[in-house]
Amino acid sequence: MQTISTQIWHEEAEPGNPFAAQVARCRGYDVYGEMLGRARWSDMLFLLFSGQRPTTAQAELLESLAVALANPGPRDASVHAAMCGGIGGSTSASCLTAALAIGAGLNGGGREVFLAMENWQLCACDLSRWAIRLAEKPSDVASIWPAAEHPAGFDAHAISTGLPVCQTLAVLAACSPGQRLAWLDAHRLQLEALSGHPLAFSGVAAAALADLDLTPEQGEMLYLLLRLPGAAAHALEQKQISHKSFPFFSLELIDDTNGEKS
Image 1 (tube, helix red, strand yellow):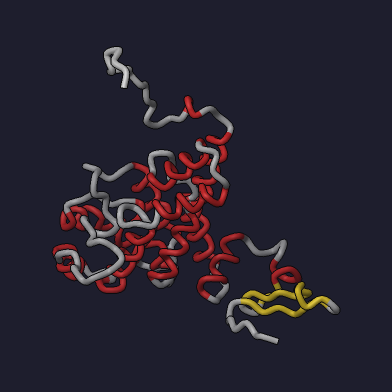
Image 2: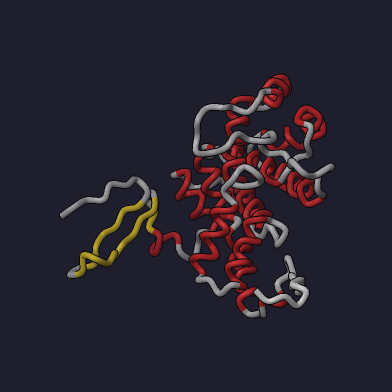
């Protein structure tokens, strides 16, 4: 019999049925015998990604971050992609895949969070390091990703920091067990001046995920996951209405052939 090697999950088979688990343990904790009914969604997420139970402060931070990211809204490109799938009658999986694909990139997406978390690893809470880092030119090393066109974690298009970004930063900084969010809140204006751009949601999320002691790879994956509920809900809503009611790009075709036949 082949063995699946993983430190995340351990199962004991049901007697007489090797294809069903009688006991399932996540990082050593009995999921259905101990965790179910006691643990929260944030507890399970943190346990899966980090390998440890979250402290009370870590769980509170992750819960608040999940609420902030749950629905980026119809203006967000990833949600818009899911809505296009919904209005076009695509399957649920196709709608979510579209949201993931569009929301994975360098403009408010998962890869931007990855790069922003790398910046936290390099700069920590040292403003002089941030000044050097934000002044550097984008790397031209060959990659599947194009060179970033703006500093990671900042908004390339806005002229000022959005109110929801400021509100989210304030709430997360107040409950975070780490130092990065509080430092970001205190030095936001200086960082914005150094970058030439206002802070973005991706920058707040990156600081929060770093305060949870996650790696950039873990943070990128969790950020993608936490933004899916809104994409799913908007896609389902669009499935129930006519394409004529789609809120974007309403088109009216005009006959400009002047009566000529082809």
